[in-house]
Length: 101
Image 1 (cartoon, one colour):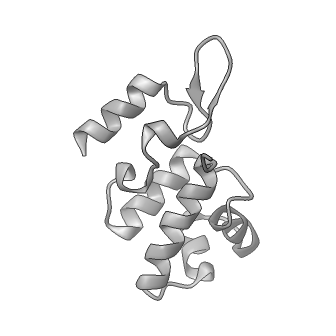
Image 2 (tube, rainbow, N blue to C red; image 1 turned 180 degrees about the vertical axis):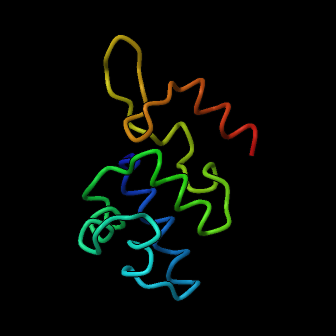
């Protein structure tokens, strides 16, 4: 069974916040969102924007690719071309992100 990309992102970020003893309130301030919205994102109940993902990676001192699930575990949504639902990246663009890291 594959995990939803937003849930995976939330889990990866939440683990790092816990390790660093960063509160949801502090993390929400960094992202410029409410504590409730940050909590929903960390639990996979809300989608991450690319800007939020970039800010989170910068704050945590990691590359965005470190937070992303492996391409084969992502659910792809149908459209003109398959796109990863959380960042609007094509699967080839996603693979490029991982190959650069």
